[in-house]
Length: 257
Ligand SMILES: NC(=O)c1ccc[n+]([C@@H]2O[C@H](COP(=O)([O-])OP(=O)(O)OC[C@H]3O[C@@H](n4cnc5c(N)ncnc54)[C@H](OP(=O)(O)O)[C@@H]3O)[C@@H](O)[C@H]2O)c1
Image 1 (cartoon, helix red, strand yellow):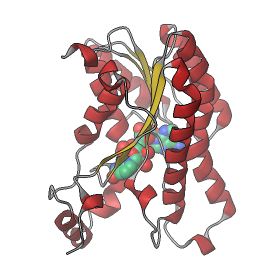
Image 2: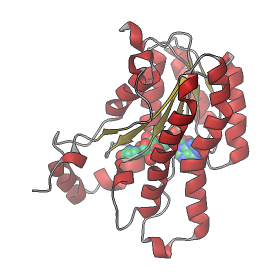
Image 3: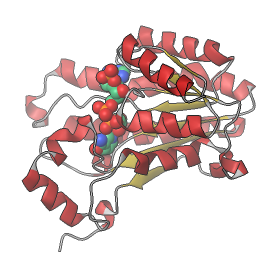
Image 4: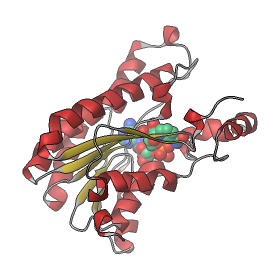
């Protein structure tokens, strides 16, 4: 491990880290030496993932939290801070994609829930944890956004709007917390093979057309995202802030020819 990537003694909270991209990020940060706070909605799954990390010789605890619920999010921030004496790295990864259809037919309660889970949760967590990061001499905040933020879509409008708001939140937090040496960045993945995106990669016609539009000619793997999260969380990425970095095999820069 290059010294810049070493996270020994650092504490990282990763929301939505019981499977998929969040789990891969948690495993990469733990392998670099970080102590992990694992979170998802179910206590049993959080505990099982934390136990598996401890079995592998890492330090980890599990704390359940639904990121759409403010009280649970604030309790998660408290528990994470108390688990190892302070949080140095926050990865706001959990999100919902609960609506497929045109914006005109969208129920307002669904809009509000998506805004709470995908946007306000990151704001709540940053407000709760950035001051103690500042007191510890700095830190890193990483949001897992999406390339959906870049496009107008027929049926994913709500999701895309929340992800675009997340990218704007990142830029504003980066400006507000830069003098405290807290870096704030977003990762915007393309299609990554997880349960979240099953409807895309499990549909042969869609998957084939998508892969043909990707310069690297494949669907992404969770580890494709986790390496960048490690860079952004560690001093190897110490001069990167306010950015949204795409991890999409090049699909967003390719022509459609
Ligand atoms: N997969 C893709 O193609 C893709 C592409 C672009 C961006 N992303 C983004 O990547 C992030 C992770 O997605 P993923 O593909 O890794 O999904 P995933 O495999 O379905 O994992 C989602 C994780 O979040 C937790 N979770 C779900 N809803 C939650 C809630 N309301 N509160 C707290 N935790 C919750 C899940 O645990 P529980 O179910 O136990 O709560 C699980 O740990 C999301 O922000 C997503 O928008 C994914």
